[in-house]
Length: 319
Image (tube, rainbow, N blue to C red; front, side, top):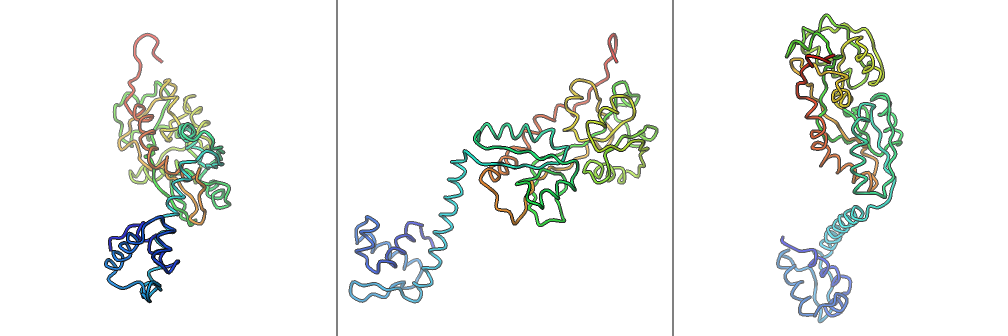
């Protein structure tokens, strides 16, 4: 069938009024125009939808069934119109976004851009130390949306990848490994490692990477904070494996150096997650679409320059 929503409205009005004339008056159409629409609908359906007795119309058995479906289709159209109008008029509302600590290095930037387009939306950020704590907050309903790496399989949740997540090895300036342009994983063997705690997404990615290369790192420190790890590496206490998003400032200023280890960067993905049972507010739906449609390009533009090799300084003033 090739019917329009306008034809469905005409059909339902005739069914309600039981008269072509009264339906025409209600629709501000002429009776011949209404009659023509009904005839076209019946031709498309291939069945008479009305029983005609004089000028009175009553629904046939097929017409009664068709009324149900016509109402459903128009109802779906109204739902779509309402949803789109809510986005067009998105001026107010509270948006609560939860994130693992690593995501705090870029999510605020994305939210700032989102706020430029929706200045009336109030934003609340919930930063957790690790994935498990964020899953608990998501489950309790404290967050509309969550930004994390691995989707939570323990919850009935909808997870959508929106951007690549590169993880890299970093060291202090002047480290001897920097003299090797592209060191193999085995070259890391003599050096102490400062790593994230068990259960964090960064630690899991590191463990998987080393497992694939059959390498056992010499772990001397385990910390639950990216900032603490960076300070320890800058102090010369070891090397580390961290999200590229967490070390952008230090790489740009030369406080840390990127180790171009074979097989890196290790690429993971960022996911935007919400409970399947939760009806998202217009503000949450709008930010979800924003992440999916624009998150990747915004992060790539910010992070791509950081992955370019940064040669050690030489000559006077070199560290």
